[in-house]
Image (cartoon, rainbow, N blue to C red):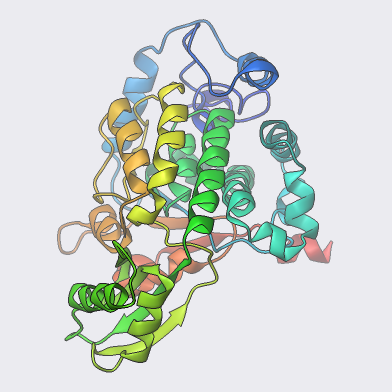
Length: 396
């Protein structure tokens, strides 16, 4: 196969082409776009800057078939982190790679604020806000792909599967050619703003729980909801929002329910509980107000079938087609993240078969830590592509 850069137009203008990182499929002329007025015109100009006129040909199908036929060790897996992995200074080590500064310039136009300055300088309280950190992690993760592509293009070229945690799923889909960079970023912007607004409507949060094998999380949530009802709270929410690894869950809902679980942790065989530094009960029905805004944006975005396998948070299975992606990205907002189940799907193989090399893209190493708990053998092939300076770069 030819070079990665020749096969994919992931440069700006290249990331404004079809599928962002995997710009091998040009945009159909006349496709609708999110937003309206001046913003729609701006997005249109940016997105059209490097779009070809040809329809997808046999090359994309041949490329997909070639990837399917790779031996396990030859293929690589890319994981994209979610909200909570952000930190002030992230992205500093990525700016010297081709196209990264252009990504942040485009992000500023799509978002309406200077994302790069916020990532590099903070303040942390602003970066940690849902409306800011989701776009920040999205862009930093894809910028990390640019770094990996520069340092080890064969790793990017040989990718056979990708998965993203919560908002990271949007980055995985851009990498896989299913979504364009600018359009996906706009969808992330709408999603983040709607989720923050929903979280501010009800005092709610998320509780990280490590439990013993006897722990019955659903029963504990049921009793916590009954407790809330006794306090006069109507239709209380308390449910599992994240399946991380064996014996680890995140429970989200009304604050009173989470406080009840913390006080009664021993009764439910919880060995450790801690409140997460987030403002709302993400991936529960308290996020229902965010569903319609995201659904409307996704209806206006052109979505393609991914060129590599991308696994959904909602059911842990591969996305099959464009409508499937549109449906599940919306459903994901109010559904638990089945990350443990997703890891099993990604790394399931016959006994004795080698595991692929895995790369976590961008800020934080949380997904690597979770992978170690889910599948130790797969984790032994884990690598992290940092959003800070490399040691070698820092020394020069």
